[in-house]
Amino acid sequence: MIFVQIINSLNYMNQKQILSVATVLLAFATAIYFQPLMPAQMASHWNWQGNVDGYMTKNWALFFFPFLMVAVNILFHFIPKIDPQKKNIDKFFDSYQNFVLAFNIFFLYIYCMTIIWNMGFNMNMNAVLMPGFAFLFYFCGDLMKNTKLNYTIGIKLPWTLANETVWDKTHKLGEKLFKLTALSTLLGVFFSQYSLWFVFAPLIASIVYLFIYSYLEYQKVK
Image (cartoon, rainbow, N blue to C red; front, side, top):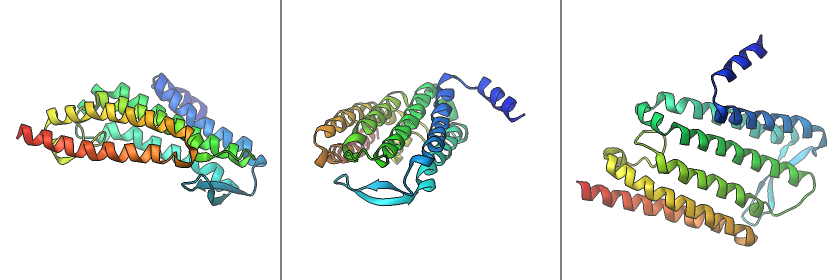
């Protein structure tokens, strides 16, 4: 009966939704497979220098990420349904699904790197995570390119929500800035000691610039 219900659910999903579900199932399969191979205490957190500064028990460490992916995907599923501007989300729903799939791949990548480290491959975690962050930032930018005014997805400020022209201009600029942040993040691979600076410096600068830019654009419209 459960198997039939799953098959019926898949019939209503498109390819991107099926792939998103597959990434979650793959995370659970990975946890089950590696459970006997992991140490009793697993490294689960790394500091700015890429050194371990946090541990979790094996079962917590292995199953935390898969269950977190389930929770996040449930949230992603309901966001388009509860937003008052649902009709606008429908206009960029394909880009939204691309982002959800990219987010799942990003989570799975971090999870796999954690397992690899705990198997004895002591690489610099900050450096190896840079491609994952770059991948996610690129799809953040790609989502902004097509985002229409809504209350749950995008750069939601009082002045962007107040005017559709300001919203569109802000998000078109946001696309460029987030894709530039993705490029900067990739460069962090080659400077492992300072890799997080290549993430947070351009990210914070982009957010501050978009805040100011959108406000000034709104003043022009007023």
